[in-house]
Picture 1 (spheres, rainbow, N blue to C red):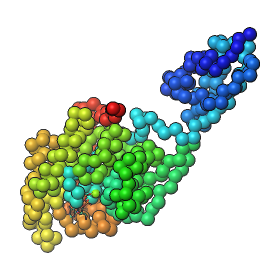
Picture 2 (picture 1 turned 45 degrees about the horizontal axis):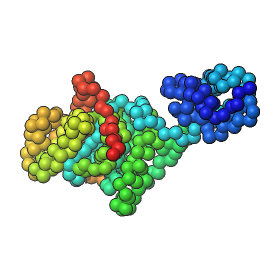
Picture 3 (picture 1 turned 90 degrees about the vertical axis):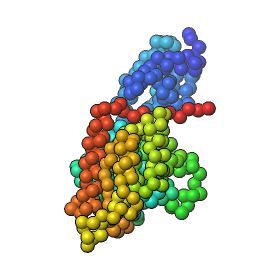
Picture 4 (picture 1 turned 180 degrees about the vertical axis):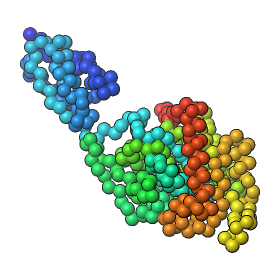
Length: 368
Ligand SMILES: Nc1ncnc2c1ncn2[C@@H]1O[C@H](COP(=O)(O)OP(=O)(O)O)[C@@H](O)[C@H]1O
Ligand SMILES: [Mg+2]
């Protein structure tokens, strides 16, 4: 009669593969810490990722057979099945049903990045696409106001034993904002790591479901938040918003360099020139170039990236932003029209990018 000890059981179980990912059940750490051996009696639990795991029965049978074969054919094996309650998905499996991830960035704050993002998201939804929008601007989250959902508090739903946050839906867009969870006045007290963890949760622990476009409103400049996004998600492309003003353009270049850096390699889908000119409502044929003329257009040309839109400075944009009714909801208005054209152009550029370039890879973290 064999003397049975844990290592023998471990070796036997290492020969059993979990068909879900092809790794052994030992590599997958599916063996619970409750192995009992009493003479020829062996009992333990196996932890399955889901309560409804389709491979439960076959894996349990295979485990039993492996112990009889490699340890002793007379073993009496009892295997309990358990399911993991909260196994977050591996990074590469995050958002499996999201086709394109677009980051909207600007060098400087106040250039209209969030306004462009909100209108782009609603514009894409109006074109019939499934759109998600994540506001990652921890120190100035503006999406709750721009979508008039400031008082909404997203709730969680249990799916396969995990609590998932349900995004708020407005104007055809699924929306989550770090502003739903953090009071911006207190955000400055957050250590960088806390903000980044909260953000990761909004990505991995939310019910985003099927999306054609997942749009990220990012904080101005380059920050830990950007780094977290680049490490967590394979971003399809970035859109850079700038005014035609020289200081804004200089900062826009820095943002562009961050994405184009050879360790990052996120393609620039194009530039948006915001506040490109001012046209008074009672003089619709006149254009005043308040922040300078064609600055972003020229920057786009010099970098050989598309100019996606020139959005005029319009009082209505500001009012609509404050009211929570994005201008694009009225596509006949001059600003609404500019945003609809932007949405259509983004669709074309993303398609082109996906044909011409390989999928983006997440930025790997190298531990020192
Ligand atoms: N084209 C525009 N015309 C008029 N006001 C605008 C325009 N774009 C943005 N704004 C206003 O400018 C302010 C800053 O815009 P916001 O989108 O919050 O900038 P950012 O996200 O870059 O900080 C807001 O009050 C917004 O309503
Ligand atoms: Mg903003």
